[in-house]
Each structure stands twice: as C-alpha cells, then as structure tokens.
Length: 446
Length: 164
Ligand SMILES: Cc1cc2nc3c(=O)[nH]c(=O)nc-3n(C[C@H](O)[C@H](O)[C@H](O)COP(=O)(O)O)c2cc1C
Ligand code: FES
Image 1 (cartoon, rainbow over the protein chains, first blue to last red):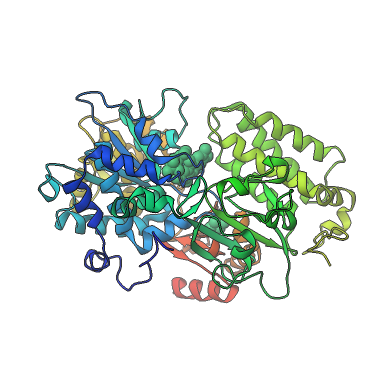
Image 2 (image 1 turned 120 degrees about the vertical axis):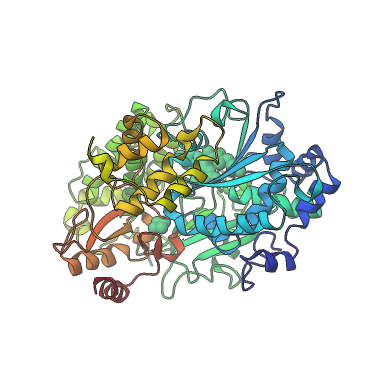
C-alpha cells in the first residue's frame, strides 16, 4: 500500500502534466469545489494521521487548535528543514515528486483558511528549492494557485523559503524566527504558534510528509486512511534507511509490519550486508535511543517488535525507543558504538543554539568527554559523568534539543556500557585503527 | 562607506530581490534576509562586511541585524573561500558508510586540512553536519550540487574535473 510514493518512479512525475495524468490535483478540485474547510479538517481528524516530523502529534487535532480571530491572517508553514541525522525522506519526496507536497499544501491551507503559505526548506537543498519553485509556477499556470482557485473564491499564494544551515530551525518556533529573518532561537511556549506564530499571527507548522498525506485523505476519506496501519499508528510512513543494510534508501511502509521483516525481507532493506550481523539500530533519527539487535527485533516481553509508534516505544526508554522521524540507522558488528555516539554528541554540541545553559554547556561536556574516551584518554569516572551530564540537560531547556542531545548518549551507555568501559580500560586496544569491542556471547560477535 | 558603491547586484538580481521581498506582508521585508544572503554569497562567494552592509541597505535594516544572522547560520562563509567549496558530511550515518576514509583521501589529495584553501585558490574544504542524504553517503556538496555514494576514485574524478 503506497500513498505518497505510488508514482514516484514514473518518468517526469515532477512535471504537472504527468502528475495530473496519475491522479494529481484531484484532491484540490474535490476539496475546493465540494467540501468546506471544516469538512477537510474532519477527514484529517478521522484519518488518525500523526505528525511525521518526529513528535507524532495528531495533525487534525493540531489544526483544530488554530486560533481564528477576525481580520487576522493565518499561516500554514511546511517544515522541510529535515536535519535530524539519519533522516532524508522529505528530501527524496520533494526532489522526485514536488507536486505531491504542493497539492497537500493547497488542500491543507484551504482547510486552515490560510491565504499565504510557506515551505521552509533547509538551505543546503537549494537544488530542491529550484525544483519546488518550478513546480509551484506550473501550479499557478494551471490555476491551482493564485486568486480564486478553480472559481472557488479561495485565494492562495505559496512560497519557498531557504534556511541557512542550522538544525535548530527544524524546531517549529525556531523555524518561525528564522522565517522572520532572525537567528533561530526557539521561543518560549506558550503562546503556541497556533495562537501566536509567524509575525505573531496564528500559524500551523507541519512536516512535509504530514502535509503530503492530506490530499490522499481528501480523495479517499479519513476512514480509508485509518484502515491502514495498526491501532493509533494509522497509514503509511516513509522510513529513511542508512547504514549497513543491503539496500539503503527511502521506503514507504504500512505501519505495523515487523522490524524483522523490514530489515531482512527483500521487499525492504534486504538484510544486513553480506558476511555481517546486525548489532544495533537507531530507529527514528539520531535523537532516539539506540537499541541492540535483540531489543529492536523483540520487545522485553518477547513480542516481535513492529514498526508503529506504540510498539517501538514499548518498554519505555529502559528497553524501547521511538519511531521519531523514521530515520532508521542500521549498524553491524563492525560499528564502534563509542565513535558513533561521539559523532552525534559533536552534532548536538555544534547545533545547540546556545540560549539555555544546560544545553549549551552540557552538549560541550558530553562531546569533550566522549572525545577523550574515544581517543584512549578516558577516566574511570567518565561513564558515570556522561550519564550525569545527560540527566542534567534533559527536561531543563526551552526546546527539546536538549533532550535530543542527552537521549542518544544515555541510551548508548544503557545498552553498551561495557563498550565504553573497554575503551577506558584498554586504550592500547581501543585506539588501534578499526578496533571494535566484541561482547562475549552477544548475538553479533560470534 | 565608499565600499558600498563597489558592491551591487546586477539589474536582474535586483529584480529578483524585489520579487522576494514581495513574498512577505508589508513591513516584514526582513524575512527576505536569508534568501538574499544566499544570492549575495552566490554573487561574491563569501559574505564580507561590505556585502552584509549592502544587504542591510537593500532591506532597510541595521547592518548588525545582518551580522547576527549571518554568523548564526553555518552556510554563510565569513572569510574568503576558494572557487569550489567542498562541504563534506561528517555525521554518524556517513561515517558508517566509510566517510572518514573518503574524506581523509580528499584532504590528502588536495594537501589541505578542513577549513583550509588550496594555494591556487581553487578548493576550500569544510566539514558540515548531516546533509539529509544519509542513505546515499558518504556525501559532499559543492555549491548546489550533491555528490553521493562517494569513493576515493570518485573523489579523484571530481577533483580532476573541477581542477582543470
Ligand atoms: C531540535 C528539533 C529539530 C526538529 N527538526 C525537525 C525537522 O527537521 N523537520 C520536522 O518536520 N520537524 C522537526 N522538528 C519537530 C517540529 O518542532 C514540529 O514538531 C514539527 O515540524 C511539526 O510537524 P508535524 O506535526 O507534522 O510532525 C524538530 C524538533 C526539534 C526539537
Ligand atoms: S549523515 Fe551524512 S547526510 Fe546524513
């Protein structure tokens, strides 16, 4: 079952004529001619669609919080900042099928009563921005954007805004600051963007994938979407796969398949690269907890783990993780967990906006201590020190970047403590090029 | 102040600047800052103080409002750079794909370290964080172009091509 990527490999699907030949823009016609904005919102609510940017908040519910004071413009802003390491699905979707997002932007903006909408794309993806701008021009030329769209009386202008290279601008209030031409410092909440967002006007921020799914929901109904998936994890999800599988790439999966099936079946990742074994997975982008092979495939209760919000988080942080953005990073037995954790710690250190001292200072400490351990100069007390610093960041910052920085370090130590200790106790072995600790008896080491 | 007379966009870019400013409501022209900084960097390779002052004048904002933004976002070069700026992704997933070796090769090949420019002014190497292409790594970017699935051989080819 494919919703977003069904036609993605059709030649020239990036052009509006080919896109329309495959059913494109029917949702715009249906919504604007036959439905009221509230009816569109109602279908999205019924679909159970949850935010695909990472937090999984129900999209329809978010829309219903939007304040609608008379005479004040409202905005829809699409979050295409995609900077969470391991995540590249929005990049893939926008580059290959830009009209999928544009069509979703039109029906979503209509539902929210927004007459100007923006797609905020990370600046590094300038080539994708050009693809989107070309596609937007085509949509204007066909009368799907601009004044009085399809004679409905509804007006919409759509613009693309480039970022400047800053992970923090993926956080929605930092994104709004950035869109206002400022530094990307997250705002205190409340007020939430739904009340005071872009230029202090009511604003909805949604991820590329969330918005792209809305046109299918308009065409087929919320119930049809909710029939896909499992429980509160409805519909399909784009999973970005990187690391040591045979076929890295972006896959659209129906939520609910088992992790084992996803990693090992030919339909998806095709298994671990030849001659190697699965050691660990980071299932939802760099900020979610890493899990060792056993726990990613099977929950602590012995159930097969499935690709859903609920199953991946089964066991809490003790034995579970999160679906997050769907950035699925697969590691085989050649992976040094200490080095991998260090690259993420450096990432968060580099990307902290510096507003909150626990995050600004704490990410620096974790980076430094991990660097010390990795280069063979770790001290006995360093592992506990890392746990302590991570704990002191978590929950003590304006935005969740602090949590995102502390979770990967805490989880790596929770599940691979012996690997950190080995680095500290045996620097002469650990610093040899390519050296990796093998846990005696672990499924990946024998 | 004289510097301002030297720094000016060509007429067609100025037209584009006008169209960009029109994307935002009246009085919110500061929102055009990032798009225009990108245009400026494409024009002058790096964001010198003169360039930033010029951008401020176009948007009718204080120069300091441009400096504080240009220094926050990593894409803007605040020092002169070479003709081709190679920005390689150093984050975890690219390392899993053998990024470290490939980037070491790149540095050896050009004889420079990260942050440096070759003596002939052709290449600058910069280290950046995840470029949202993790499954296609190792990756680097030169201007708008992504170079993916990099190997040492591919790096050599790219350098040969651009170094001509
Ligand atoms: C540090 C940080 C980075 C984030 N990066 C992104 C991002 O790149 N893309 C995204 O859609 N959401 C990102 N988010 C989540 C957004 O704040 C927001 O929840 C999301 O865009 C809402 O859209 P959704 O409900 O459709 O997921 C990030 C959050 C944080 C705290
Ligand atoms: S880690 Fe290199 S592109 Fe994401």
